[in-house]
Length: 590
Image (cartoon, rainbow, N blue to C red; front, side):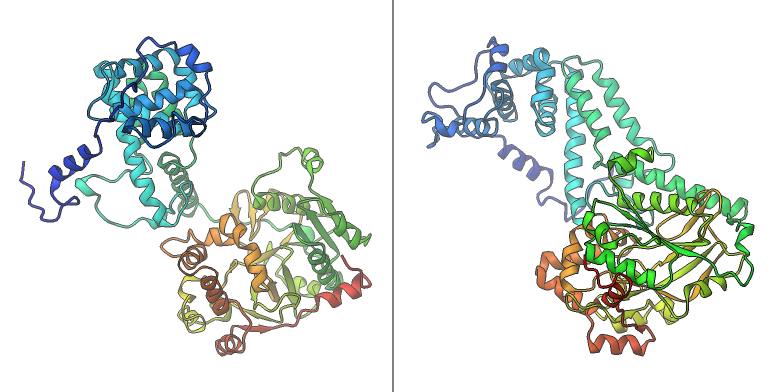
């Protein structure tokens, strides 16, 4: 074996320094006169029923501490106040047995607790204490089998604690798997081969082997198997993340297969779409909304004034005030998505709002095939901006196209209560180089998709009457594949009032960082996303840092307008939403 010649080990002083530091943490507990563990034959059933009182209420338990045993006992009794004395005794035994020396009967008493009261301890102790217990088995098991299982599990959990702690600095929460394209090409330490996502079996071999080895050690078996099952069920471990990444890789492989073996899926356009030229297409909108009544009223008024034949509004939460304000216009189809709605649909209410949106949109598209030719799926903060009547624009879409794409523009932020009048385009929509983004947003532009905070993908109008089609948030799918026979809807933009004011930006920030648009952007391969930037700025500079970001990227200023205009990315379009409410609903207010 070659000698190691590293002059800069991770721990200065090498293994000798490691052992010295380790032993320094194992000083045995000291005991004052009359202190100590209970005898080996203590009545465990009585301890189970006894409840730990608050040591702060007992003068005999309170500081000043007579010994390190007294200090540890006080801390444990504080932690286990109101819980079983047996659980507290277990903690005290673990504390003794992690040291260099311990009372002679401590190992036997520890094993007796698990041999006789395993079910009770598993219910009374949280995962942290169960890991401490399995580590204690690694040091004090009665035979080679117990010590081997305990040591193996202790090593596994210790390694997990180290790498899961380091992983927090990646900016991702424990339940978020890395994107497949985040992987860098670099050798693993110690000349190890990388785990193969597609075919690797290291994870199942580790867990399966530990499960089998525990079978030969009946006293530790319940504890070991409970911990292994908890690992398998926990959504925030490397084992779950690996399964997510494996599934992603399998889906990517499946998605790539058609490209090699067959043509792209093309959604067939129904024959009835080719209407006589004298008949203008009938169009509608579907939206699943959770917003203030005033915002819902503005959304409805704007699109009814544009000539929508039907407006299907699904209220994601009951909003009787909005229903009263909208009135009984026959073009409005309002549905409250309460428990009775989901029961009637034969579905459980999906936890993700995106899934609820897609369900409602697809259901509407299929049901309205006889009354509508086209339907758009947009949100309550999005507004169609056609330069001519929409029916005329839709009539110009080639008859072999199943969907018409809407190019998004994002509102520049104004003061609360003021409707935005200027919007920005992406560099792609403006037909300019990507490098120009940094000219407009010099500090943050390189981290933004097209300079947008929200989606830069846009939304679609979809033809109705296409069997096996599903109307998603940004596209139409046919038998699981994105529809490829598509065309841009020339002459119509989609205005997104994503952050119309600083106050609105702050209000929506927690939701968008957790499950909304910012969280999605943070997973772009190889890049910082909006969520990463905002997390960093808030940690370093607080709200002032967030305001710096907002002012550069979002706020409607003469300087930003000038930069956008110079690159052909500025759209000026004064929205008159309150005026539309007055005209459509005769001034009715929510």
